Length: 367
Ligand code: UDP
Image 1 (cartoon, rainbow, N blue to C red):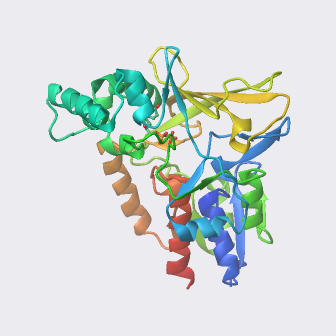
Image 2 (tube, helix red, strand yellow):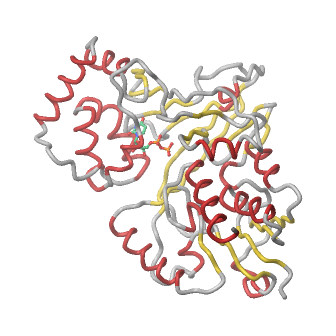
């Protein structure tokens, strides 16, 4: 008999949730991560008393009551509501697209006027059945908003023209004919008080975790330890990119501590013009209503991922979907290993959906 029932590769959300559930079912578990910390990309670290989202902003939001109750067992969530501001060459607009945005853009006052304006621009662009992100965006909010608030940001974020991107990406954003600046259509929302690292630490309580261990470099030795491997790393990397590399977008963060209480007065400001080189600036203290004398900001620069970079966003376009399907086929023919999470499943997961998916796997194989 092997020493562990499960070797979990990756101490991010997927790995931590599955580990927590496996432990509850009396399984013997080892969690490893090649980084020197747990929590994957939701990792937060305290700088000047402010929890800095080291791998980009993570705002927990969900409509899934079960997931909400689940995370609340490991952290208390505050009442943070995401309301980003868009900065287009110094002109500020409310996000998501709502009556404040429409009023600033066109001077319209009522929902009917806003809808008429959008309809006029959609008709002028001749779009009936949107086939890509550009057409989807114009048909949702019209040409002016597309040009000022979507086109530049999206092309910086994805490094591809908007007409070569799938429309689902823009459907993540609500478009509302009300004065509601809440970025998410989610019943439950908040930030884990004290940081997400603490939350993941609570999930992993009593579980053996080894950090700084690279699975792919010690594969045979590590696999010999456990009956089943749950692998949350990149699926193409696992196979040595033998069918070709899947494409990802990577993000570089330039983080600065500033000797003033506030830099931008909001947690998130998106720079939606093409000329500003960063996509957004995060001011971390505002996620937790901080009143520290200093502030910490991170500028985000999006770039094409190359081998060795940190993969962030899967590029779920046609080419990559076809390639991923081939890797998935390989994975399914293998015994003793399960692929999960954003990198293992090559999926643009939010925190809640990745948790739901780990809970589902747990249900399927542990119960
Ligand atoms: N987006 C945009 N302008 C904005 C914010 C978002 O055009 O000011 C588009 C962009 O294509 C982005 C997508 O909407 O990739 C989804 O945005 P979201 O904020 O959900 O992205 P994430 O927070 O996951 O980076």
